[in-house]
Structures are given as structure tokens and as C-alpha cells.
Image (cartoon, rainbow, N blue to C red; front, side):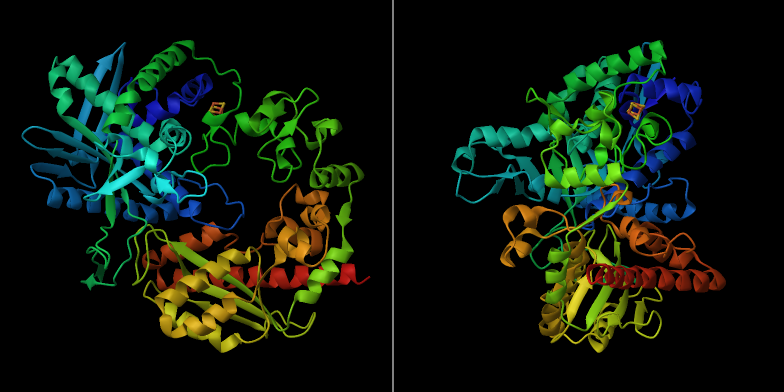
Length: 624
Ligand code: SF4
């Protein structure tokens, strides 16, 4: 049986995973062909890429799970392949010796070893061989931001990262000779940050991936009695530099990623040689478990936990169809709002997350009432018991008075492209390609069609300036309210555009300063309500809640509570689909393009019309 790196990572999640694979006869058969290997790795890369796209999404909306077989998603693979080539090109240019890399694994360096009847194997994204050292570089479609944001400080002093960049390589500071970490942060905090690199279901997932690769490479060398050569190996991640700003240089209509004005390269390496060495014990123990699981072949349920990666893009593929079926889709114990810390029982023990499910607290009402201390949780519970809704009309009425007319109901659709496409963009920047605007001139006065303006880029060229002009044509920056669900997202895009196009900075920043969130009316905004004279407790408490919302204030959950509108009859039904259709423009026939273009217009229009409808309905309810 062949165990690829991706298999290794999945099979060591829990004993049930391997057994379920066996039942589905997916991968446990004999050997693995190169094509199978590639398909598996590509799927894994796709999940990683799409996951990174959503990590940058400041919207709190739930994203539909990605169907990896979807042909459109494969459109995204080209970006992953480009990142791999960029890292390969960088290493070839800056490192001595021979560099082997290719977007086709077939031409990449392969390592394998046999043990206990299993063949462990991996391909290396970028392999660099010099006289006295070998550099192994694993490419990941993530950014430096995650690593550099491991920042700490002494109280009341500046924050510092645990990494330092030297010659475009990030090094852990304790590995730099003579570096005085204590001047920047207490050692305990540094160690806390460093320990996060070992969390294989958190930031450490990239490091763990590299450590498994190292384990397989070392296995091959040990098998051939060449252990002495292992000291020459160095292990790196090759990722995108989040600080890189594209200067807009193109050759043959393709972006050329020269170093930017601040000397930043688009890719950066992270030296993880020492960390992956420390991780070998963990990988070895995981290998023992894996072999045990294969022998056991036990598909009985396991405790749910970190290994399920619940609600992450990397969620275990068996969670939704099998193991997670125990969790009801509505009003489960996990649907209590902002409940990361869980509940404290009578003895002071905390119960949280998937442990609640493991312990049998499955439905919202399974949580003993004595454990509920937050007013918001009590409201959720009470409305569920009485199958009703809660409303604080006073708070909502006062917030309504803060709205200035006209109300500009605005929604952007954005493409968080891994590689910047236009001047001024950074990796994964949310690049707007569409907006819908409904203008409500007076309370309740807004026509679905006549008061709507949609701008949608007709191709993949840079249409940002046209978009700004269209926005400023319809929105007066000196009056009214910029209104959105999660307005921070719309404001963020407007601010970015104001930096990239300084000639529009003044009106754009005026719009930015007029932002107002639908969430402030329905849920709350503690600071704002306290400024309006409400007590801290009342300001923290939600304004409106219906048990059908199941703990969420996303438009998908609030829309059916207030209106009969639905997204179900639309061809494009969510933000993920909008991105996919936009990304697929170049692959569409003329007829298909026309259909999809109209579908994108309808979808975005529905987003802003939904806000108009919810606002109108809420206004009527509080004025009854
Ligand atoms: S969902 Fe969780 S418990 Fe189920 S197979 Fe996956 S990791 Fe194991």
C-alpha cells in the first residue's frame, strides 16, 4: 500500500478515517499511480488555495463547502501552479547549484521508503542541490502574514515578531546567533509563539506538512544507509509575501513580479530546518498510530475534535456526511452566539466546542440553564423554547435615527486573487470586480429596479477606475449613509481604492466615514449604543433575535425571518459561486458568458435589495 504525504496527514487524523477510506475503497488499494498521486495532491492544494482566499475575507458569512470536483474550481489551480513556478524561479536565481522544479510533479524529485509493508512517498516542489547542501522547499499558497503576526511584547512596549527576515528568508530569532529576544519580549511569550508552529491543526499545519516530507526523505536515506548525508539537508516553506505591492509591469499581457518599490520579492522562504527536526518525534509517533489504525480497521465513531477541523476549509471530508451528522443543522449547542469559551458548569469546569457534542450536549436546550450566564444566550434559549422572537424596539428606534438619507445600500463582489493582477495590489487582496447599489432616498422609498445600479467588470482587465467613477456618479460623498451588512468589508475596499487611486482619495474617504452596518440594528454595537446613553449591559445585548436564525446574523439567516425573498431560485447563489463565475470568464463561450454575466448581476442586486427589504420590514415592526 502506498502512503503519500497527503494520505499520511489524513490517515493520522483518527482511527475512523482510515477505516472509512477502506469502506469507500478510495485509496487503500495496492500501489498508487502517478496520476492518482497528482490528483490527490492537486485536490489538497486546491483546498489550501481556496482556504487562503477565504481567510482574508473579513465578512463573517458562512461559506458553502467547496465541492472539489467542481470543474470551475480547477480554474484556481493555475494560480497555485504559478506560485510554484515563482518560488522555483526565485530559488534558481538566488541559490547556487542545480534547482529542480516543475508544475508537473512528474519532473519533480521523488523520495520513498518501505516499512512494515507500506511504501511512504513524496514529491518535492523545489529541490536545490549544491556541493555541500541540499535545500528542500515546500510551496504553500499562504502568506507571510500568518507567520509574522506571531508578535509579542513587554507590557506597554512595541510588539515584535518571533521571526526576522534576512535576505528574504524568515528565521526564528532564537536561531540567529546573538539575537537578544529578551529586549523585545519575555522568553515565555516567545516560546508561546514558537509552540504555535507545532500545532498541526492550526498554523503548524504547513510546518507539519514539511516535517512529514522530511520524515519520508530521511526514511529513504536511512533505508539506503546514507544517513550521514542527512545533515546537509535544509527545509523551507516557500510562500507569498503579504507586503509585496505589484507595480503594474506586464510583458505579453502577463504580470511581471519584479521586486517592489520597497525591495520586497513576491515570494519569501521560511527556514524551518530546526523546527521540522524537533517535529520528527511527533511524526514518528503519528506513523506508529497510522500503522495501528490500518491494522485495526475500526470504523466505529471517534470523539470529535481538533483533527476534524470543523468549519475550516480543511475540514475532514467525513465530517459533513458521517461523523458530524450527529450535530443538528439548526439550534445545536454550538449555535450559541460568540461562545468560544464555552460554558462553566457548577464545579467551574468549562465545556466547549466539539466536546459539548462528545459529552452529549447536542441541542441548544441540552445545555443546563444554570450554565447560561450571558443575556444573549438566555435570549437564544428563551426564544427557542417559546418558538418566538426577541426585540428591543428602543435601541433599534434610536439607531434608526442615526441614519441619514439617502441610504446607499452597497455590496461589493471581490476576487481575492493569490497573485496580484493590477497595479497597487498585494497577494490575496480583495480586488473588487462588481458592486450593486440600491439608493433609498427617503424611509422606505426605493424601487428594486429603478433605484438600482450594478457595475460588473466585463472581462479580467483592470476596471477599478471605472468602478470608482461609477460609485461617485451615483453616491454623493457629502451626504447620506453608506449602508452594508458587515460594512467593515465595504469600507476596507473603499480605503484600499483610495490609496491606489489617490486622485479619488478625498471623496472615497468621505464615503468611508459614512459607513453604517445593518448588524448594528439587528445585533448590536456596544460602543455606539453606550455613546447613545444605554447601559453597558443593554448595549452588549442583541436588539433582535428569532430562534430561526440559529445563532447567526448572516443575511441568509435574517432574510427569511423578515421577507419572502430567497436566493434559491438564482443561478449564482453565494459569494463563492460569484468568484468562480468571474474567475471562469476566459473559459466561457459567448453564450455562456452572457448567461453568467446576467446571473452575476442578479445575484449582487439581490444582496442589496435584501438589505433594503430587511430595513423596511424592521422599520415597520418597530414603528407598530
Ligand atoms: S470527521 Fe473527525 S472523527 Fe470523523 S473521520 Fe474525520 S477526523 Fe475522524
